[in-house]
Length: 248
Length: 320
Ligand SMILES: Nc1ncnc2c1ncn2[C@@H]1O[C@H](COP(=O)(O)OP(=O)(O)OP(=O)(O)O)[C@@H](O)[C@H]1O
Ligand SMILES: [Mg+2]
View 1 (cartoon, each protein chain N blue to C red):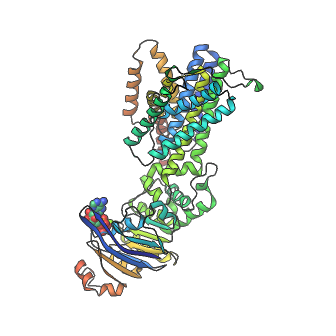
View 2: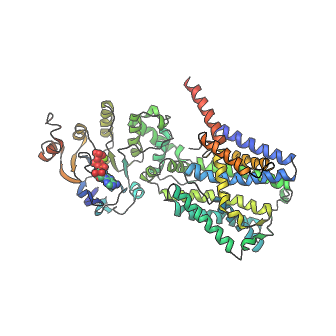
View 3: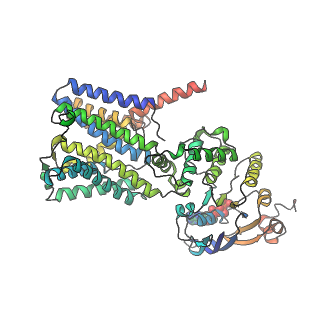
């Protein structure tokens, strides 16, 4: 469903992404690992259209999307959550999710209707709030919400457009173990036909949810394989200095 | 995000009622003041729609006001068209200009957006100023007023004309409030809050902003149509950028992003101008000090500050 072919991204002389290729099947859960500065967020920016690759092609369902902009890709069913919270400040949790749900339905331009209060949007809002654990926080102002709640909303916004391809950049960064577990269950509960790419620092979570794992280092895919293969890989062991040796 | 709160309804109703009373009880001069306030209030509502709810601070609303006035004037005085056709053409002209400015400037942010609108406004000014067909710097006269005798309104009567202008303020406010609560308006609030995220959700933000700017321009054009009928004369002065500056001052004085505040702000500014102007020529200085005080006190404007206090109090009561 997603085909990345030899994409490179240079910032001036700095080669941040180098000949990245990956192929994702529909419904696959792919975890991207890699140390700080490896180029994981840059890869997401390239996939989502925030950045244009210096060279290479990206195909979604067989169609070239390399030259499409952010909103065009989003309308094809690509959605992302950000490493740094990127919310609608000043609005409530409900209003945040309603914006995402209505925009996801393509309802943005009517002067004479109120899509954000429509039944389908309300249902999506409640459903997503339930999924990310914000059902009892719907009327909280985002500015007053706890960090954990803001993190949940970050993922909620990405889900509320009902995407086909979901990119999540360190969704559990900075949250406690309880919320990491809840996030685990959330991923497991998502419809199987959604294709998901997750950048994750938490190796246990990564191994647990992944069908396949890609490891980035210095902008290059240095390894790709199943979680078990990853655990046994020397390259990966070297990069992570034996972080999970205890588990293996 | 816009909510038509009781405080907004009360404020608009109170200001309009007070002005109507002032026009009814006063003579010719108070009515002129009321008309001046009404025109400025419509402009301020239209500017607050884009600036306060879309984050697009414009310095060309004066020019758009002038375009509305000139289009109406040209259609009636030169073209000989009826006032209904002239009105539709003038609204369309203002909306089209706004759509163009909005589309070109939509991807420009911050101070550069303001400068771009200023540049477009100045261009419109120069075109009108240089245009022989539109009378150049002499302007155009002989503009017709609406003939509303069929419904018993005499637009040549200064009181009835003033009341008509106040009615248009209410219509402009209601239209802006309605759109802000619509799907379109909610989406606009989303852009104001976080444009990048709206794009990531699939919205073509620049197009949305252009349409918002166009709608706002149509309201500004409506004020221009009234201005042309008021003096039955138009000159390039209408398009001067200081008009835009004054509208922006009104919006900030009343409360940016409150919609009701700018109407109160228009009344405040014009009354201050005339009351203080009676004593000293330096009324600008007084208004300037007023504005500085308003900005220093939190930048919420007079109405915005009241709304803020009441919300704080309600919040404390809810907490207790
Ligand atoms: N716009 C930019 N201009 C120049 N360099 C950039 C830009 N964006 C990212 N970089 C550089 O590219 C490299 C990769 O950054 P990126 O944010 O993709 O890493 P990451 O793998 O997401 O790291 P982290 O785990 O810290 O989130 C870093 O060295 C970063 O400084
Ligand atoms: Mg990153």
